[in-house]
Length: 104
Image 1 (tube, rainbow, N blue to C red):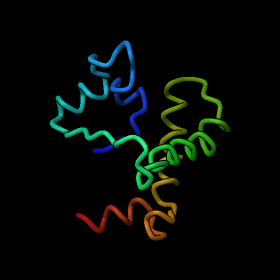
Image 2 (cartoon, rainbow, N blue to C red):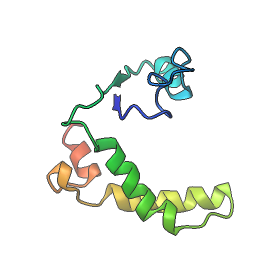
Image 3 (spheres, one colour):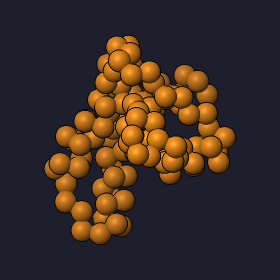
């Protein structure tokens, strides 16, 4: 699994916490998931994770109000259902569900 080297994923680029694993890193290790960091300034990787976060922010978090954890979970479930069935250009105009079904 690769990520965008954000501080929620790794402390690798932190001056003060470089040697402290994040919750994400600990959990990935416990589950046996190999966590590979993207080399900084690698143009072919730039924006892939950030683009997804930006779209979620624009389409979900910025335009919804949540009144409880239960309300958030219900709204997120609806958003995920829609998003996972929406065609995406990086997936050759397949939805994430359609793309995934190619491999199972």
